[in-house]
Image (cartoon, rainbow, N blue to C red; front, side, top):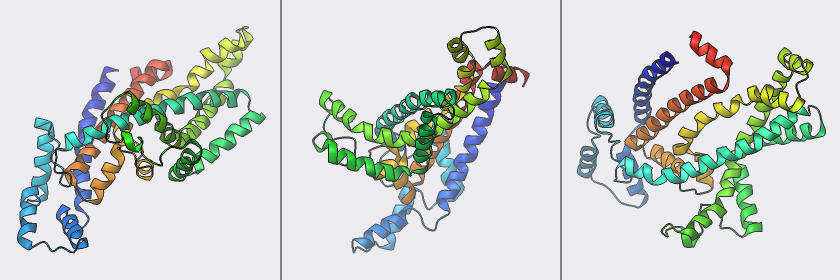
Length: 332
């Protein structure tokens, strides 16, 4: 197990270095840079920016330097000083800009994941134990519908339902009177009253997929010889199901733990844009559109780091839960 973790850590650093470099390359591929966005915005307002001011902007943001110098300056600051750089568009440090959005992204991600687990596993287990029953067909039908409906469409429908039948403001996580207010009990309750809509929207697709996975895994386990052997020994049915096949079929529970860490930052970008949620997703999208390379690069680097760490934690959790995987680790 220690050898496995050590290999993962070494490959993690190599992977992150490659991802950070490729990210910078992709950002620089489109013609122009951040100053192109500034010029386009000025022209849309009927203004004309002189060449001298454009050159000063390039010098100020370091865009006049070669690509490798820009990349090494940024990655060196990250590694040596923990400095993610300065956002061009927001004119503030990337760390403070991301930090202001992380809390709401974290709340949404954790709540959505708990919603998925609470709904998917009981329904998946029921569908497997009552295969081809009316309940199984209904769960399968709803699962396919949930996987097929685009999240943005479901978001629009839920926003309409929230406004039409519950009188809530459309979009956002706060009512207008609480949007800029300091945190207090009223603002917290207002957040909770709005949070259910994005939780349902984000969780539906994940719930539908996990129901199918749990059902398929449990059906595979129920037809294995050890289940027949346990029944032949007279083990009570409920104890047999919970101790062996259900336990083995819950591996997706531990596999999805790895989704939590990157989800704390990224959230659901499309849903956040449609519903005007003040999370990290719209900030990342805006940074990509304006070619704010330090902000985009920092987002991708953080998400990549959390994804690698989350995947490793999922593997370790699976090894703890399933002795078969633990045996593979020890042999590897």
